[in-house]
Image (cartoon, rainbow, N blue to C red; front, side):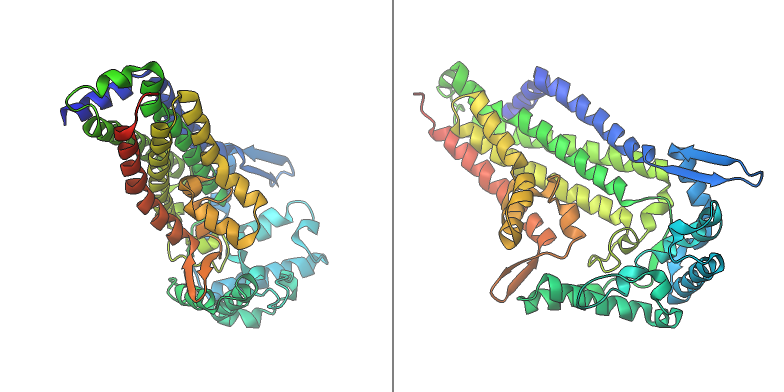
Amino acid sequence: MLILRLELKRMLKARLTRVLLPLALLLSLLMAYLPVTFCYTSYTDPAGNEVQLTGLASAAYEKEQQAGASGSVTPERVRQAVETYQACLREYGVTESYDLPEGVYERDILPIAPLLHGVKEAFADPDTGMAPAIMEISPAEIDGYYAVCEARLASLMALEQPDSPAARRIAAEMYRQVTKPFTVYPGMSSTVMDYQNIMGFLVLLFCVVIAAPVFSSGYQSGADSILRCTRHGRACLGAAKAAAALLVSGAAFAICAAVYILASNSLFGWECAETSIQMVYSIVTLADMDVGQLQVLFAAAGLLSVLASVSFTLFLSSRCRSTAASLAAALIFSIAPAVISMTVPGPLSAWLCSILPAGGTSIQSSFLYALTDFRFLTAGSLAVWTPWAIIGFSAIEIPLFSLLSVRSYRRHTAG
């Protein structure tokens, strides 16, 4: 325990740590605020003047206008919203809302817009996946709205997983367990989660940079040759170094994630966190949770991914004889999932991104995007939804690479 305390103190006093950890905290606050800057509203006031709002003023205006749409998304309310939309467009002789005269959309369509989310997707063509215009949907069909959504999921999975009956069966069962009717509290978009993902990736990179020199710096300076001559200079010291890196990285990510969630929800309103994720992402998203639960689950999955990445970085550090080599290798593996998701086709990409330690917080293929997608890892009759696979692999990699790093450090010989 004394060795662990000393290693923690040494790591926290390192110049790199003292720079990167406060920077990570500041970036968390910045990432929480940036989605606010994308808010923009333009409308015509009763006097005929054009008013343009940005930032929090725009978000507050839209929340006020859409307050009547808050609550349960029942088929009756969706049908009424569709009828209102269609009546408005017929009145002005247009087929799309962007063709409406100035100010009409803000007055008649904006207040019901949240209830229209997913309507076109639910009634998409089962063979092609092409969504119809809202004007082409019969309001009478919306009485069976959630049955239509289940049928849409079945057709979507037939397109996404044509060779895996197990994946289609699991997806259908998961969606049946999703709480319906959905709930919506306007004000928060998917951009908020995107920036939480970016925050997680940046913090992961900082933690990897902090962990990369843990073993290799001692090899490079020669200090390791002296330390391993002491009574506890091999396995015990190696375990303390690894534990200290994991504790510092885990605490840093947990604090940054908590700061992001608190700041973001305070800016947009805590009631927005009660919105069903189906009303933010696809209407047939498989997970049964609201935005607040998604934020917490994504933070937990990100924490596992960071710890797995740090464990792997420690293993690389225990094998490399210079800090530059261990840092370069660690950074390559940290960005590898983003590169793989853009270059490697289909199932192989899903497998690699799930297995790599940084896959849970990658820019292109993170746990967040896996949870709002419909990918499954399949092998014969086996099918595992990718978010659960990411969590499972990370949980295995943390102790595996931590033990391997200590074992490699204990057996290291100066050369």
